[in-house]
Structures are given as structure tokens and as C-alpha cells.
Length: 327
Image (cartoon, rainbow, N blue to C red):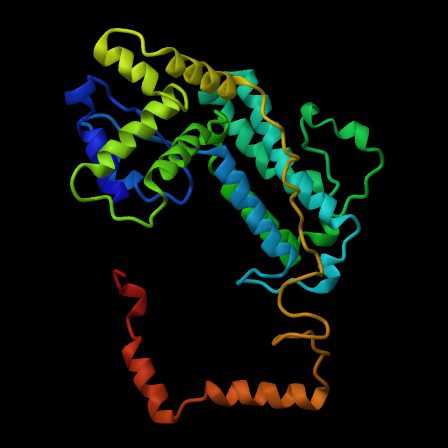
């Protein structure tokens, strides 16, 4: 449904507004882009990734690595017991943000995004103490004699998972150099959710949905008490004094500084969660197998892949000329 709505809006943009939407800002989870990429003849819509969503997804992957919740590799306790491991992981997202901020201020985005890509790919090496390829804006000289752990970690599952997560972010460098976000859209949807009362009611029939969305739009663009502006627009005269006071109060409330909350603390639960607790859980840590048990497990795996002589001949016949196949 979401993809259909956005596709309709793009396809009617020239007819209704005389505009071509050349850019599409969305989060990394959106699958709508394939529907609108070629909606205009001769023009390809470019997708810009929201930097907030990219960093949030990166931190989620880093938390999975810290808690050994990745699916492809097993990360041992020794790897997750690195000195200052949590502070190193917190610096990864900050380093990506600093790189994006530097290249956005530098300008010439169409050329500099390649340098941003290389700097983001260098972040794992920067975090683990190797600063040979770090640019001056990272201010690595202030870190003192930091131990270089790259040679020790470069073949470990932990380092490989961090590199994979960073490579995904680096592939989006062309979008990240703009440092665009969808905050204003999220704010608008929060206002719509208040007027629609969440998803508890079916407002699709009739005109209830359109009326409430229109009210939410007026509230978002003007002020919480938008009825005064609406009244003046329809009747061409000012509303009563009480409405004027309410309008001024709502405008003042919108522009007054809000109580700034403390930023959300991002934590990486090294050795606190993951594939089982030391003492409890369905998948606790287990000691290494002794030689006898290990030999039994190896024999069991070997027996499971054994096939008869007849089956071997069938497999050989079925896989002949495999190198000449077009698949």
C-alpha cells in the first residue's frame, strides 16, 4: 500500500505540480525505490539514504557483534574481552558521523564521495589503533601511543564482522555525504498518528481519513490551534478574541525552547548477552570436547555424508558436463 501511494504521487507530480521529483529520501528498509526509479521518461530518480537510519542500523549490527548474536560467525569470549572494547565500538558511529560532516562542509559532493567511502572503510583500522591512513580531521595525534591491534584481530570473526558492517555503510557514501535525514517526515507522521488515534479505528471508509489528515497537516504547518487561521481564511474576518489568545498561546508554545532530554546512551553488551549465560539459559557456555567425544562427533559427521557405490555413480552421471552448463 505504501509503495502504491508513493508511486501514484511521483507519477502525477508533473500533472498536478509541474515538478519532477529527482531525489527520493528514505530509510534503508524501504523497498519502494524500485517502483519509482524509472517513473519518469529519461530521468532516473536517485535515492538518498537517511543518515539517522543508517547509523541506527550500524549500531544494531555492532550490538549483535558485541553480544555474539550474529548468524554467520561465532565470536569467542577472548575476542569480546578486548581492552576498552565497549568504548571502541561507541567510537565507530562517531567516526562515521565525523567523516560525513567533514566532507559535507568540504563541498563538491559528486567527487568527494569516493574519498568519504575510503575514509569510512578505514574506520575499523582507526578504531583498533592503526592510524597510517587516517586523515587529519580524525585528530589521531591526540590519542597518544594507542596500541595497534589490527594484526592481532584482522583474521578474527569479530574484526571481519565489523568490517562487513562498515563496508555496508561505505557503499552508501554517495548519499551519506549529504547528511540528509527524514526527521521532518517522522514529526509529521507523529502528528497524523495523534489525529488518527493510532490504528485502533477503521477510518478508511467515507471521508473521515482525509478530514483527519487535513487537520493534522494544518496543525503541523501552522500551530496546534489552527482553527483561527482556518476561520479567517473562510470568512475573511478575524475570529473572536478568545480564539486569538488561544492561537497566540499555541504559537508561543511551539516556539518556546523545550526541555532538552539527555541523549540516549548507546551501550554494547560485551559478555553480558548473546548465545547463552555462563550459568543459565538454553545455550550455556560449554567446555571443549575431550578427544574421545570429539572423535565420536567426527565419525558421526563422516557417516552422515557417506553414500553407497550406486549413489556415487548416480551423482557422477548427474554432474557430468557441469563445466559446460550455462547456469
